[in-house]
Amino acid sequence: MLMKRVFSGIQPTGKIHLGNYLGAVKNWVDSQGEFENIFCIVNSHAITTTQNPQELREKTYELARVLIACGIDPKKSCLFIQSEIDEHAALAWILDCNISMGEMSRMTQFKDKSQKNPKNINVGLFNYPALMAADILLYNADLVPVGEDQKQHLELTRNVAQKFNRDFGECFKVPEALIPKVGARVMGLDDPTSKMSKSANGANHAIFLMDTPDEILKKFKKATTDSEACIRFDENRAGVYNLLCIYETLSKKTRESIEGEFVGRGYGDLKKAVAEIVIETLRPMQEKYQLLKNEQGYIEKILEEGRERAREIAQKTYNQAKTFIGLV
Ligand code: TYM
Image (spheres, rainbow, N blue to C red):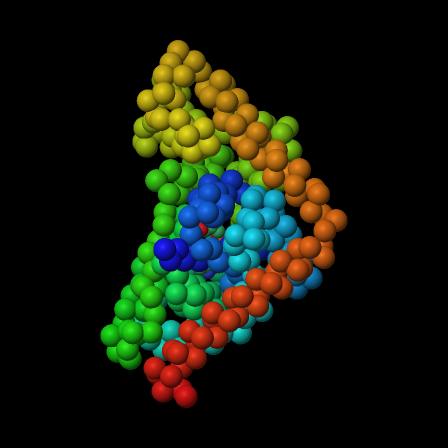
């Protein structure tokens, strides 16, 4: 039986955090036997915000190392760097010409990012969703596992694929977003009303995958909660709800049994339990990451093989799109 194809991507900006892991990377790893996987380090997306060139280069390889340490198995998944396949930018141009200004202007992530960074609102940032659509459509992906913040970009991807197919002929597979039931929107520990993000400043905002056990425990101890005593899943109590959801995702226990576990106990116990399960989850990844630090050749080989495999698929789809639209 033909396996469904998965495509997803992650930016090599900042340090990868628990939100990235629970919202996306964990699901990439867990689905490796079930789907045919293609994962991309989207360094071309990264330059929509200001980057130091040398650091960007280093972070791209560093992210590859982290992803492999998290369990991405190069025998089961294709891993490659976006900028090494020219067809991404080339297809984005064709898609740009098929997306209305109106639709693109409704993208909330563009609005958020431009508000946060008013000095660098560039055209690339505005067009970001077209490049993301190109990433996905080039590989005829059936499924795109992402966190909730990417839902709108996926809708745009589906819309542009459908429009192109209608106007020029069946060229693209129309993909579906795969958003986890829990963990799709991990919130900042210091401010549980805002999404955990790589760019937020607070020292206790995010748990990074390479944080030490001490750092993790300290950050959870300081996590914002509330003044109610009872520990239960209540979306209106954002801080406690966020901690419980992290615990739920990693423990795989039901909500009922988790609430039962914490009857008559305080936030101190909850924070300690969440910290412990996060520390234990990250421990083997951190160990593997340390081992991979001396294996630059191995990482480069994986990315080279990934590039060759990705290129073959991407070139085929891009040539097809060019033909459909009359560019060849
Ligand atoms: P990026 O690099 O911001 O994030 C990578 C993945 O992590 C998810 N994520 C979260 N999930 C839960 N809680 C959070 N707080 C949280 N923060 C981030 C994101 O939803 C994402 O799945 N535009 C994408 C990268 C991209 C892409 C693609 C993804 C480019 N092309 C094609 C899928 C397919 C992004 O900026 O992800």
